[in-house]
Amino acid sequence: MSPVKKIVIMALIFVSVILVACNGDDAKTSKDQQKKETSEQMREPIESMGENVAPLTGEPLDEPLTHRILAVMVNNHPSARPQSGLSQADIVFEILAEGNITRLLAMFHSQVPDVIGPIRSARPYYFNLADDYGALYIYHGAAGFIEKMLQDGAADYLNGAYYDNNQTLFKRESFRVAPHNSYLITAGIDEAATSKGYTVEQSPDPLTFNRGEISASEKASEISISYGNDVVRYLYNDEAKTYTRYNNQSQTKELSDETPIMLDNVFILETYHEVVDDAGRREVDLASGGRALLFQQGYVKRVNWENIDGRLLPVEDGEVVPFVPGQTWVNVVPTSQGIDQVSLTE
Image (cartoon, rainbow, N blue to C red; front, side, top):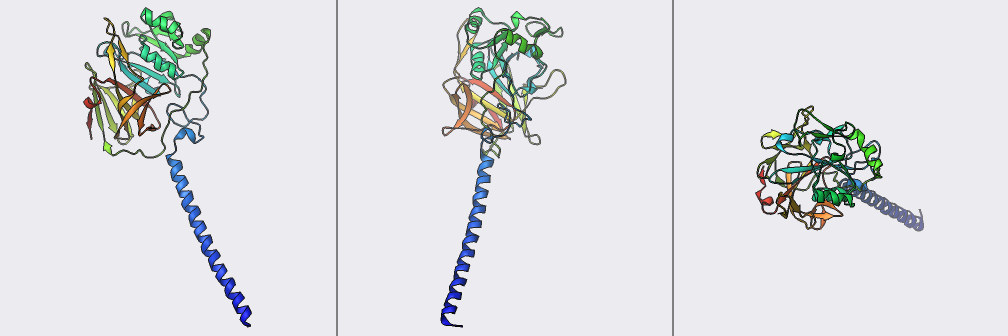
C-alpha cells in the first residue's frame, strides 16, 4: 500500500471516530434535554397545558364548562347544620357575619347539586367576591341598603325573598325553622336568571394548579381555627390525601347521605375586620393582602395573600403559589385574631 493511501485511510478512520463521538454526545444531549423538558412540564401549571380541566378545581373534564359560576350564600348557624350541597362546591369562602358566626359563600361550577342550603342573607364582601369571579350571586334576604347596592348593579343576583317557597327556585323545609329552612332548587336558576336579562353561560379564567409534588417541609396533619363560638378543625387523611372538616367535634357532612367534606386545599388568611353598625355587621378588607397559610397534602406553606384581579390567592416571592387540583376551602380570620392563633399539629 502506498504511503499516500495509508494517510488517506488513517484520516478516514480518524474522522469516523470523531463523528461517532459527536453523535453520541448529541444523543446524550438530546436525552438530557428531553428529561429536562419533561421535568419542567410536570411542574408547569395545569391551565397552560392545553388540557380540558375545570377552571376552579384543575380536575380533568370530558368537555369544557360553559355555564356560569354560582356563588351561593350558605347558612352556617348551628341550627342550619348539616348543610346540603357543600361536598360539590369547587371553592368555599368562610367569613364572619354578625357575632361569632361565620357564613359561607360556596362557588359551584364543575358540579351543581340539585339542592343547596339553607340559604341566608347578603353581605357586601360576599357579593363583591362573587362579582369578581363573574358569578351569579344567590342569597335569601338583605338589609334595605344592601339590596339597593345589588339593584344598582353591584352584582348579578337572585334574592330568595322574591321567590320564597315558590317550589321552583326556593323551597321551605319543615324539618327546620326559619330563617334556617330556605333551600335553593338549582333547576330553576337558568329561567330566573334569564328572565332578569342575565347570561347563564360564561367561561371563567382558570386558577393556577400544580401537577407535581408540593414544595413544603413543615407537616400539618391537624389544624384548628377559633371563631369564638366555633372551633373549625381540619384533619388530614394520608390515604385520601385530603383534609376533612369539623365544627368543634362534629364532622362537616352532607345532610342527605352524610358524604364528608373532603378538601385538597385549605387556605387561611388574615385581614382587617370592623364592626360598622349596631346590628353587628362588618366590613372586611379583601383588597390589601397580608399573611396566610396554605395547607396541601399534609404540609403547610407560610405565604402571603393578595387580591389579584378580584381573586384571593396565595403568593410567595411575588409569584402565585399553585393550588393542588381539587376542592378548596378558604378561611378568612380577623387580624385581631390572626394566623398566629391557628393551631397546627404534625
